[in-house]
Length: 340
Length: 295
Image 1 (cartoon, each protein chain N blue to C red):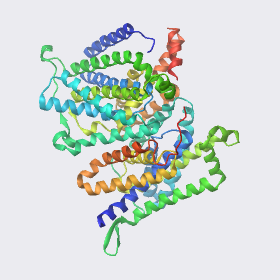
Image 2: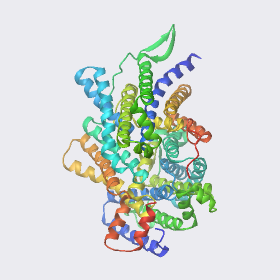
Image 3: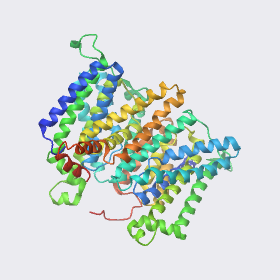
Image 4: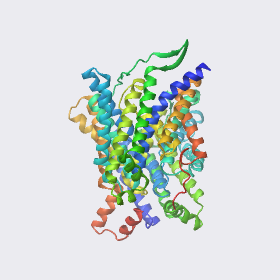
């Protein structure tokens, strides 16, 4: 990522956009929904992979930021009827603020202590919905009505429009993060991750760098939450469980921690493997409790195997393959850097 | 005042369960510098085994003992099969493997036993005890829960302190390289640590399930609070794990008791509040040694 120049990033993003557009038209509504789902995960995981991979801070609570983004979206759309684009910006801003608050509190914490604090944040925060049922709708949640714009015609499938919106946001976020990672800010993150004292001696403000990373990852999660609200049409505490936060970290590590393509691989894996396994299980005519749980077990096995076979995540495996075919010589130095 | 006593006493019983989970996490942390997210899942699985044994033998104690034995086996097997190959790789890999293990165990429990809630028997009467005419808010079983965890903890502590195997474990946790040089098989010590952690987890599972029911995700919350307790106490400190568990159990129970129906929804927020206060004052837990971070 650090040697890749802006034109190459833009070209990759555009190519992906074209592929997604074609896929969304060719595939059915359910697949369109999955494209949207993957794009939502990519948005959230991309922020987390920078936080954990570049600045070295673990977060098991990014689901909480998704909840903040989603509830902000639902409230603005319900009560003020704002257009989605405006809502998206505000949702991002609100979660950025929340990320700053959490980041300041977290800047002193390390390793498992940070993991524990963020995990509990992820578990606890959605419960605020129960404290003010009048505002947040408690268990039932809030309904969000999101429609495709009129100029596309009445017959334009909503899921396709959702897939487009989510993918567009995900790609824009990826391009921005790729630039950020290569900038002075990204370099400071790496410096802080590798050696805090050395970074401080070299003039990096360690606390600011760490908080900044939290703000960026929270904003990404908030945008993802806003998209989730628009796609699923329902914002309820049940959507933001510990499982979600853990899935985000899992996707980041499985894909290849600290790499943006890795965020895409990881998101593809955590969305597609369970669905694929369910398809296989039901097509073999297994009883429902078995059929619904075999995919879960299979997903667990896949996580374990990927980590054992590709210690650097899927992106590490991809780089190794590219290196095998001598695609680029620059890749090899990147891989060495990535392992630190 | 009576209410306060009741909430505190029943909080101690829950706190000891958090303490057992916290202690199992500390055991693994000291050996492998790794957070075992599968700890709750392993406990859930061994409790299902206990249910099967109790169903077939009609003996609570047979189920109890076999669950603990299964915990030992599961802990050791997990370490040998999936964790050991990942040690020495990037830190988070092993953590993701434990998450994979958790998901695998929850899936398998669903395949074998279905997703429905199962009730789990208590080993003693769950009728509330009384001192004179005042209800104490705890039952014989609650007393057993606290006593069982306490005795296990004390046995472990004595084992660490007075046996040569315990000395080896402490040496390996203190400095693995030096321990290895002085002839300790550190790898074996780590496996034993996982086995003991499995035992503690299994104990917690059997003890908590009469109150929570048993289903594939039933230990998720318990795990989160056990983890919180370990973080509050300091992940290097077994004493801290027990104190952290008790503190969390009592405060959460007081909050739930006094806040009424809203209390159980807000329990996690209260726990977060405690954790934030503790970590603001001591970023590495209450019982962390005053150690300077290595640079």
